[in-house]
Amino acid sequence: MPTPRSYLFVPGNRPERFAKALASGADAVVLDLEDAVAPHGKEAARQAVAAWLPSAPPMHVRINGVGTPWFEDDLQMCCEAGVHVLILPKAEHPAYIADIAARTKGRTQVLPMIESALGMWNAMDLARSKYVERLAFGAIDFQHDLSISADDQELLYFRSQLVLVSRVAGLAPPVDGVTTALDNSEQVRKDAMRAKRLGFGGKSCIHPAQVQQVNACFGVSPDELAWARRVVDAAGSAQGAAIAVDGQMVDKPVLARAEAILDNASAQPL
Image (cartoon, rainbow, N blue to C red; front, side, top):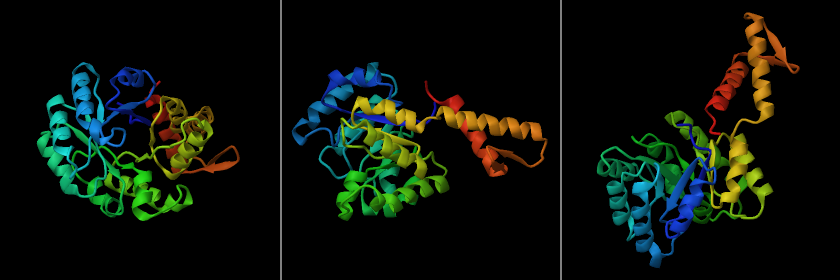
């Protein structure tokens, strides 16, 4: 399956929204038992998710974090339901991943969310843990943990760290955090394009209206596709000679990027 560009989080206590989320065009739908559900609703949310999973396609579930009163029951439910991908909030230690892998018998991939200073510090160890699918950035909780007051240049270093760690560990590019503005598609676009420029491969969404914008930003644009075809065609005709496309020299890294764009376009979900 293509690597998801968009992850749409749906409150686990709103089962009437589950099917709508699947129809939203999101590459991955996340049934959320953590931040989207108040403490008094955790049990009901878990029951609703457990009841819906048997008839659903392979799903992502975000459980409550290690050390919370709901972690054990959430994890047990995911084990029994055979959850495809488990999203672990506030991931900080590789031991968390090892424990989940052992209890799911290696049948479930884990997507650790980096949401604290300690999680960022241990990001490489988390990324190298077996059964980790990719890393995700929980920017809002991360800002709170470090008393950072904004989400742009203030987090540039940390976002770049996750991109670097993911590449060194051999993972897919990481997933950026949510845009909290529900009715501002331009802000969603700006945030998604910033993440793409930094090397992220996807973004979390909290409303179906954000999905199309995120998919478009992380997909291959018509201009990128046309450029890649010109480069590959020119290189094929040059028979090894030096070439230029659009006034720019084409060397091996440029050709490799063009070929990667074509590969991504062929694998891109419709």
